[in-house]
Image 1 (tube, rainbow, N blue to C red):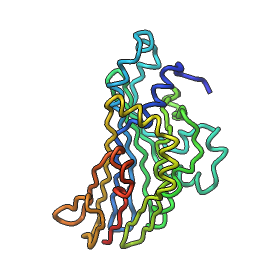
Image 2: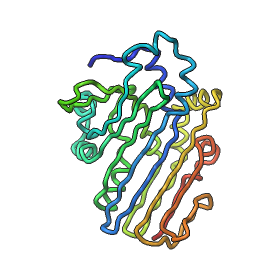
Image 3: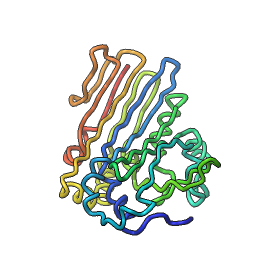
Length: 256
C-alpha cells in the first residue's frame, strides 16, 4: 500500500492517538437494540502539535486533505488486517461504520465507530471483542468506493485498546462493566509515555460516557455519574488523568 505521510506526520498521529477527547455513547431502544458509538476528537491536540509542523510539511498535498466520509468498517480495513480476522470479527466489522472528518489545517480530526447491536448478547460481544480486531498502527483506511478511490490515511493507534480492560455483563435489564486493574496497568505500561507527553504539552484527555435508556433506571452504583431527571440518561464525565489515578471511576452497574 502506498505510504501517504512523511515519517514526521506519522509520528504526529502516533502521538495524537493517546491525546484525544473520547466519548462513548449508548442508545438503548424499546425493541432491545442498542446503537453504540465510540467517538475520538483530536482537535485540541492538533492545535498544540501544529506548532511542531514545518511550513514544508504543511504545504504537502497529504497535509491538506479535507475529508468527511462514512465507510463500512470492514470494507475500509486493509487486506493485511482482514486476512487475520475470525469469522465473528468479520461479521462484527461488517456491521459497523467508520466516520472520518479530517482537515488538519483547521485542527479538525474526528473519528467515530458506530455499531447497532441487535440484542444485549450482541452488545456484550461487541464491547468485549472490538479491540481484538488485528489492526496494526498507524493504518491507512482505504475508501473502496469507486467514486472516491483516494486512500484515507488515519491512525487507529490503540483507539479501541482501552475496551479490552473491561469485563461486561449485559442483559435486558442491566448494564454492568468493571475495570480489570491488571489489564489496565498493562495498558498504562504500553501507553504511559504518550500520556506523559500529552500532559507535558498541557493537552487534556477528557473521557465522557453517555447512556440513554428506553425505560427508567432503577439503580446505579457510580457516585460520579449524573442521572437525568427522568432517570433515563446516565452521563459520566472524567478524564484519562483521573482514571489513571482511580480506575474504578469507570465502573458502572446500572439496573433498569
